Structure formats: structure tokens, C-alpha cells
Amino acid sequence: MTAPISQLLKEASAEQHKAAESSGFITELMRGELDLDAYTTYLANLAWVYEALELQTHHGEAFPSSENLWDAKLDRFASIEHDLVALGAADWREHFPVSESLAEYCTALMRLNGKADFRLIAHHYTRYLGDLSGGQAISALVARHYGATPEQLSFCNFTEIENNVRYKENYRATLDGLILTEEEIALLVEEVQYSFTLNQKLFEDLGEKSCN
Image 1: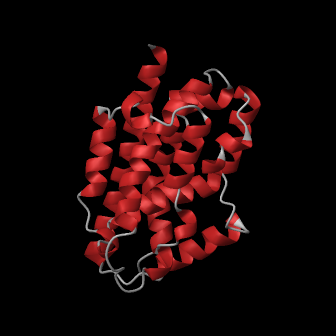
Image 2 (image 1 turned 120 degrees about the horizontal axis):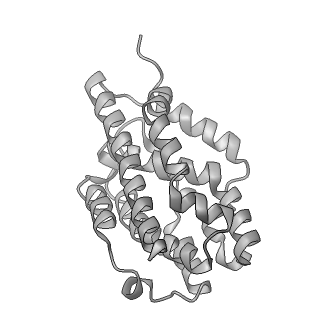
Image 3 (image 1 turned 90 degrees about the horizontal axis):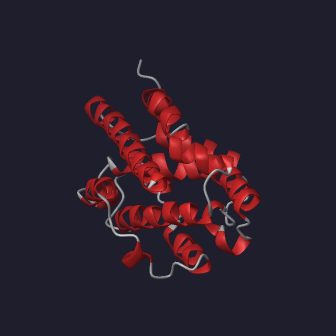
């Protein structure tokens, strides 16, 4: 009997998840070893990612059994743009051009066919569940180390979601109820691993920039 989809995705990406969380850039940022400009650069890079991701999550009809995943409460692009304005980076498109790793990430997202494409779930899972899990901790650390204000940290706060833990439980239950073939599940697992790889490349690129 095949394990639940949520379990398969978690197990398949466990090592990559750990590597992403312990990447040099993220570790230094969370320890207070960088500055608010580094966080702004990080956020501007995420703006490109979430713009591409949410163009997909708002496109087309969801395939059967996935409807509950595409919850607008999870959307982050508008919050990121709000924060960038508050951080003095309203012109982020001009000042934070797309790097090679970022271009690969956005291209990977834009090749998908919206909510009708089950592979989009891999990127939705990687980004939004990660945000729900670590967002508040990131917000607190950036505020503590770099003096960021609440006005600059709305990306990390899902104000429309009352209980993050319960929400994630319901999200995983929806994953487990997806009607997919064994072949599709294997492709979904592969796409999740690719999604984590894309995030890791982005963090590595940011780490190199912070050293320059």
C-alpha cells in the first residue's frame, strides 16, 4: 500500500529541506550577521518567485480533488510588494534583476499549466507550507536583529489564517486525498525535489552576493 502523499513528499525532500534551512545565507541572516539590505534583497528575489507562482495558482481550473489547495489566503506577492515599499525598494524590478538561478526558478514555474497541472502542487507545497512553518520565526528574528518594523514584515504573517497548525493539518489532508495515479505521484515527488533544488540554488546565489 502506498504511503500518504504528504508523507511521501516530506520524506523525499527531508534532506534538501534541511540543507536549505542551513544554507550559509539563511543561517547568517537569521543569526543577525547580515543587515536589513540583505533581507531586502532576499525579499526582492522572492517577489519574482511569488509573482510567477501566483500567476499559475490563479490560472485555469483546478483538477478534481485539488480545489481546496488553491486558497487565496496563502497568496504572498501583494504582501511582499507592500514590504518592499516599506523597505524603500518600491523599484525592486529595476534594482534587483533576475539572476541565473532566479531565472531558472521562474522558468520552471511558468512552464506549468496552472491549477490543471498537478506538478504545480509541488511548488505550492514547498513555498507556502514553508512560509506557514517558519514565517513568524523569521519575522521575529529580522525584527530583533535588524530593527525591521511590522510594516516591513507582512510577508511572514498570515493574518487571515487563525491557526497555522490546524491549517497545515488540513492542507496535508487535502494532499492525501488527491486522486493521482502511481506515475503521477512519482512525478509529483520528483517535482518537489526539484522545487527544493531551485530554492537551494537561489540561497546559494544570495550567499555569494552577500559576500561581495
